[in-house]
Image 1 (cartoon, rainbow, N blue to C red):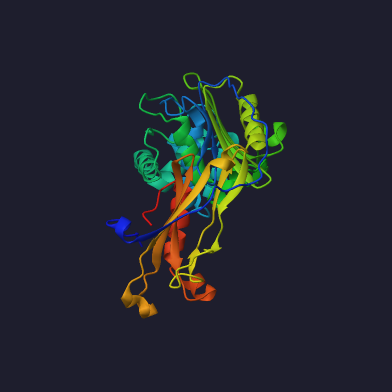
Image 2 (image 1 turned 30 degrees about the horizontal axis):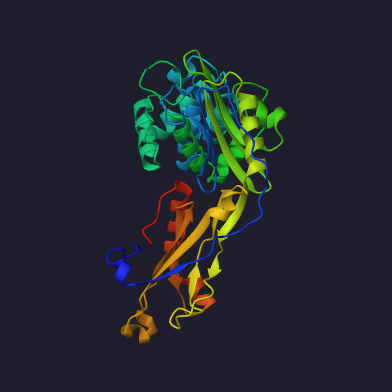
Length: 386
């Protein structure tokens, strides 16, 4: 349900809460990376913690395969067998060494795609899921548009330098990774160090070890990601990391020292920022209006990464509809009765709808779809109208 904004100023009770104070980790560290483009993003809120040339279009090499993987997973065909075509068999570059005519489960192809960066797997996946290479590329660009990748265009499923019209940005790749990591299957595959798959043409199984050294060797908090390299794109890298419940996404494009770039960004952020609950889930307290007192709730908490200094700069403004006489019949009170807006140093960083319910139990049952919509929009960084 969308909140009725028009004429809101004359219909609202405005409540300005005091600045929110929260304990955070101290000591701000400087970050300097080798990469031409880089970004560090908070996964839950989408806040950009660090960036350099993050919106500049560049070749992206094999981190393209994050899009290929999530489309395969979302196809619902992961248990189906894929017959390897001559086109897939003949794909150049990094390979799983699949054989023409071989049949292999789509799920195993996605593991091979993400762990070993198999270009043959990318083509086999695209032909299965999209019906053809061109059909799959169309799906890639549709998904990119859907999730807000505004400066991205895909021309193939693997990222090879066989076209000029294949590019993205560090920011857009962080958006894609943020979207993909909300899928449990993707997160599991991206975080797998070794995968074994049946080999129908030999007496031995495929054994694929992940190329992401941040995950397998270098950084204990790394939870997944995707490596990439071509002669034109140079080194590209997407990784994710989690420490004390704080989930981060790092992307570097053309980064000669990308492993250290990612570790440096993560360590700086984990030291400097703490996830802080600004607006808790549950009843809105300290309301004097008897219509609302004890009956209004926030369904989804608002948590945001803040430095110690920033915790002094948070303000929350709540706007509630002016109660109407007709509301004496409580069945006529609308489901959404207001909006909470959260500001950091005067800049709006998020909103939450305020819901009306006669009891906690009725609150839990109200607008299941609205609640899930709010959560989904939070994942994509979309500001709700309500």
